[in-house]
Structure formats: C-alpha cells, structure tokens
Length: 323
Image (cartoon, rainbow, N blue to C red; front, top):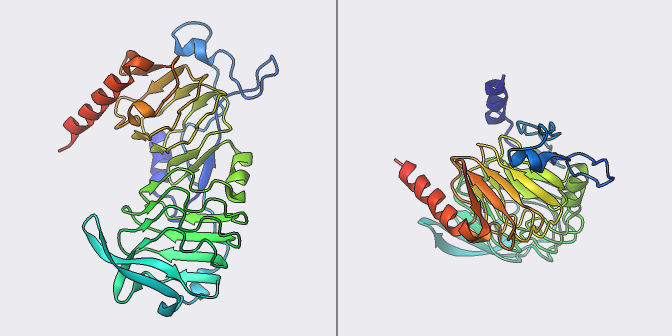
C-alpha cells in the first residue's frame, strides 16, 4: 500500500501547489495544537506516542491556473528590455525591463533568438501586470524581488525545470496575489518568496504547514509536535523562523535537505529526529539560537554545541555516497 501511495506522488500532475497539515492535537490544558506526550515518547519513556493528524504520505493536489493560458498570445519582444548573459555555464538573456502596458502577460521563453535564463530584480514590481505566465526552456533564475510589490498581480503560472530557481522575496508583498501554480520540477524555492501575499495567508489558514513542490515553505504557525509528511524533499530557508510554539520535530526519510535558518530561533524546540540519509541540515545555522535542542541521528544524540560536528558528519556521508 505504501509503495502505491509513494508511486502516486511520482505520477502527480505537472502543475502542483499544495499544503499538508501540521502535527499535534489540542491539549487538555487548553493549549491549542500541542500534542501531549509526544516529547516523552521521543525521549524513550512515558506513554505511547499519540497518532499524529499529519498525513503520513504527502500527496500533491492539483491547483488550476486562474486563466486559460492556451488562448493567450505571447507578449511582443518590444515589451522587454534584455541583454545577453551567462550563468553557471548556461548562455541566454536576462530580462532587465518590462515596457508593456501591463494586464495579462505571457512571457516568451526566448528573446532575440536566445533563451530567457534570468528575470532581473524588480522588473515587474510596478508594471501594472495582473496575470503572468512563463514557461522556461532552459535554466532560469527568477531573481530576488523580481515581482515584489506588484500590487496589481492576481495570478502567476511558472513552468520551470530542474534548474529553475525562484529566489528570495520574488513575489513578496504582491498584495492581490491569490493564485499560484508552479511546475513540480522547479529545483529551488528560496525564503520569503510569498511573504505578504493573500495566497500564502490563505494557505496558512487552511493548514499551518505550507508545502510547494515537495518543499516546506512555511511552518510559522505550527505548534507542538511537528511531523513532516513523507514525500516532502526539503524544508526551505526560514520556514519556521522564530516559531516559539514548536516543541519537537520529526523528519521523514524522504527529506534530503534542511536549509539555512529553517528552524532558527525556535526556542521551544528541544527534540529533533532526523533520517539517516539526510544530505544537509543547513550548517550550524539550520537551528541557530535553539540552545536547548537535542538532535537524534542514526541512534546518536547531538546537543546544540555539537551541531557543527553533526553537520560535517552528514555532509561527508553524503559525499561518500556519491558515485
């Protein structure tokens, strides 16, 4: 049965944005969202752990684009300022300026006969664009703040690939953004990409653990014993930053990376269980400021002072596993 459920993840539809629930139950003492007994169980004593209401396997749900983009023509080349660039061995052009009239914009994947590989900072910030579609043919960076503070933006569809990165604050403070669809191949979604958007706030109200493309992007409203569902591959930067309501964390085998500051300053977080095959825990900054933390990895417990030792051990094991 578990194999079939995991297979369903791999066969999930291309355009995927979803969320999953946080662990924890309402405590008898009235503390909302805190699972009673979870910590004792993680320490090897006390009652049997309660069954979490978190999904054991994360199954993506399809979110449809707000518009039928098949009926929309690509914006003309003269609507864009661009110039040649090269990034990590990939050559193409960077969009440096938007000159169009706004509204519905389908961004071409090539300009001047070259693939678009970057959208620069603040290009669409005050553009009057209401809906955006972009499908990358090549490696693409959407730079920090590329669409930030575009208050007219309502929806976005980005169909990227395994080399695509959506960088920090790319859509931050887009105060009318309510529809987001990303293809699941997108490799990196950085921190604070959707801060200050109705889309993110709506997702957090549906469930406090927000997952996009197998990446936890927000856990700031999670409480108690947080269990990441199987199928998630990464916990993003600043995902639970300064969340003082998480008390324990269980990470499944599917998670390969915990990024920098993902659980930084979660001062009540004292117990963490990591899978054996995790690749990185964000260096010593993944749990920065969590001085009372005890992390269990491969049967060994590590304190806050031993984070650097643990990080080096995990990274070296990963390097040794490479072909």
